Amino acid sequence: MSILPSLKSEAIYARDLVKAGLDAATSAAKPGPDGQPPASIARASQLALVPTAMGVAVGVLGIYLGRKDRNVVSAVLGGLVGGAIGFTGGVAWGTRDQTRLACQNAAQNVQAVRDAHWLEKHPVAYA
Image (cartoon, rainbow, N blue to C red; front, side):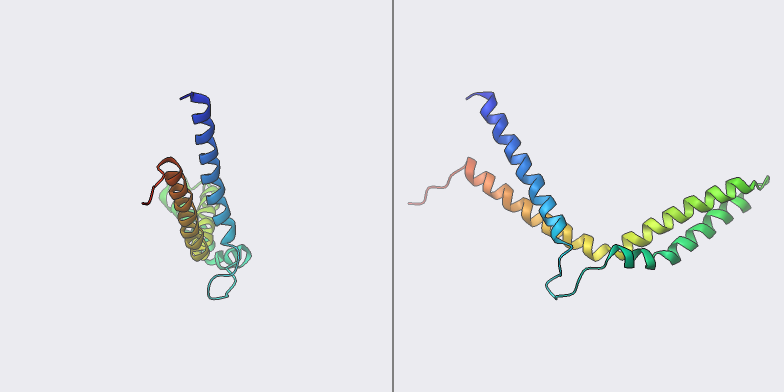
């Protein structure tokens, strides 16, 4: 058996796996089985304002109260880092159902591709 056809077969298999995962991830933006549209990023980012404010407060106070020199620039940078962490966490929490659905769909699609690949490599002869 030549290496080139085998390598081509595996490259096609890898491409099909990636395509199955990406198709599932994009299908998560469609309405779910209950007919409800998924949470939008805009809505999730609006809901992330409270965690953002809390992150800014913790970042500023953590830097400002934790040091004796109390540098304002360090406190501002701490607030920016805390706000970024708070915003990221808030958006991740707001879109968790959409992310879960995308992961489940991706797992199902990838498993279907893996099953088809296995059957192609190991044909079953029924008598």
